[in-house]
Length: 235
Image (cartoon, rainbow, N blue to C red; front, side, top):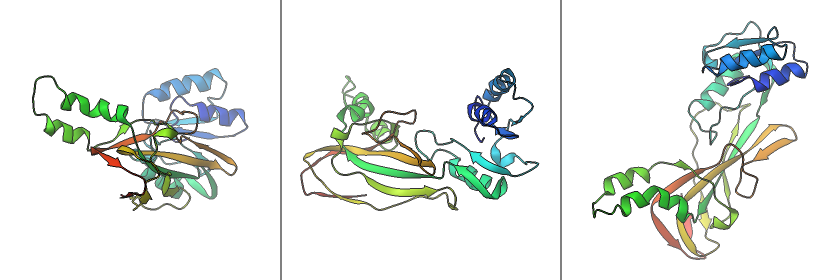
């Protein structure tokens, strides 16, 4: 269990019959995980490592590796390098990875409230100050931000599939083109993902799905852009 946190997956694995579980967590949350394991009678079956998974050596390779290292999006920090390393060093050749893959989706969105929270302090500062330098910074990064299906200005596009059973590179890129389907003002891009945990077990944090802990990512444009039906947008 990579990124075991408070040890929920590790403890449930024991409950379901695992004879040996390796629980890996670099933060002090592992202290709570150890207490939960002991309270449930599993401290003799779970071996804890307070390290990054890339620093761990196992006495035997695992039959199953489960991880949830995504953050808001699957491209979080060292998620992909950690999974590549774990698959190569810590998993048996016929072992199982959970999740198996994530698919990244993107859509153009009309999101004045999300956009306003970023730019209004710099556009309308009340002192007639030119705050363009700060505005350029806040519109050149991304934020957590969920939208509704009604805010999409075109069909979502799947721009990347991260197949953890085969992935070798940490670089992900794509070129996408839309034909705008309704008139509106575009404020940026919204990115989310869906996942296959194992065969037949999936979930999604798409705008039309129930909200999950992951939310989605809002990538603001430098300026809002008025779009009409039939316009072409390429990224």
